Amino acid sequence: MEKDAPILILGAGTFGLSTAYHFAQAGHSNITVLERSAAVPPADSAGNDLNKIVRAEYEDPFYAELALQAMAAWKTNPLLAPYYHETGYLLANSAAAPEKAKKTLLKSLGSIQQHPAFRGKISPIETRADIAKVAPVFDGPMEWKGYFNRFAGYAHSADALTAMYSACCALGVQFHTGDAVKSLNYTSDKRCTGAVTASGKTYTAALTVLALGAALATVLPEVGRQVAANAWPVAHIQLTPAEAQKLRGIPVTYARDLGFFFEPDRRTNLLKLCPSGAGYTNFGSSTSSAESEGRQGSSVPPDFSAFITPADEEKIRRLLRETMPGLAERPLINGRLCWCADTADSEYIIDFVPGTSGNSLIVASGDSGHAFKMLPIAGRWLVELARAGKQETRRWRWKAGQDAGGDVSWRIGRPVDLKDVPLAVKSKL
Ligand SMILES: *[C@@H]1O[C@H](CO)[C@@H](O)[C@H](O)[C@H]1NC(C)=O
Ligand SMILES: *[C@@H]1O[C@H](CO)[C@@H](O)[C@H](O)[C@H]1NC(C)=O
Image: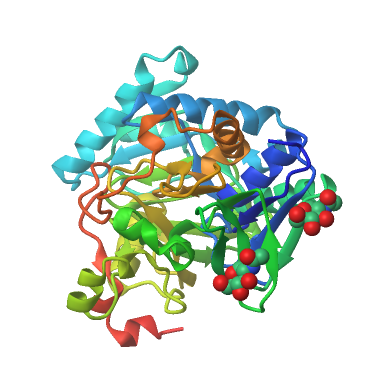
């Protein structure tokens, strides 16, 4: 591909920004990003959030290796290093955890226990005293079992995306916001030549990259059910500066069966909390017609995302009663759902779209809720794919016929569909 060939990237979230950044770094000079939201990072991007866990434990060593590469980049890339905080990661199960949660934890531990990168970084958590050693400020009962991993932490995700956006601008990437893509353009032999937006503007490109997360099917209905929108609830407690100061440096703390939280945000003193579970789907209001149409499931709802359910709230309060009971009855604020793009096997989709010609159309989606940590390196996979002309990594290929939305080995419980959430809860805010 010529360095001045026009590249069009749809979506300015985690995959979109990383892709723009890496193509620009590789010397490409005509890169345009289209984003339907008014601003970058977009309001509905999952990565546009206070913080995300950065860790290399995975059931699957393939992703563990990639996460280690990403963590090296989080630490050494001066653009991103200010947003990475290696606070450590306390991963455990509460006394009431189901068998599945215990199994997942053991697999996680297994993936790093023998790895040289973690030598001396892992300590078992078996007693209350073990917890006191790694998080002395927690004063709840915490009969947890698991481990503490020093070599992990979190990234301030919205700030990291903003930094990457600024770097892209400095490298000459053009951004156009506030105009959704209506359709893709093709030649008669199915070469994608770019996109047309709702306002009627046409963008011409030699290569178009679809980085639309769970909204992919709105532009590429052919993706069918291989990507399903799946959301996780998030809520916050507003701490006073003194309360936040007291919690400075706490590890990312995760009871697999209850949920997790982070060190309070250094700017706003917000404590972010996420209840665990299989999250929410959006398979449409009428199962019969939506199911048979086969593509309804992959969309992000236009609204109804600014809530959390009473069940999730209760889970968060249980998590707090276990860890920091003094905060357990505080009001939860800024509750919302954070939409991701799930695949059946939690593998990403990074591939040319079958049936299109001229290596002109690439999909980068299927984050499955575990892609943000890859921000520093994900775009490189797209540059490599464009160069290779074929996806050699089998697991990242187009997944025709694989329906997302089934049981996922590393999640606890079954997802709840938005249509089954009472309207009174959905319209609470
Ligand atoms: C980038 O590509 C577009 C589409 O082909 C073209 O109209 C534009 O002039 C190019 N810009 C530069 C700076 O080469
Ligand atoms: C792109 O597609 C739109 C809508 O299908 C069409 O009106 C337009 O002429 C096409 N533009 C190009 C450059 O092919």
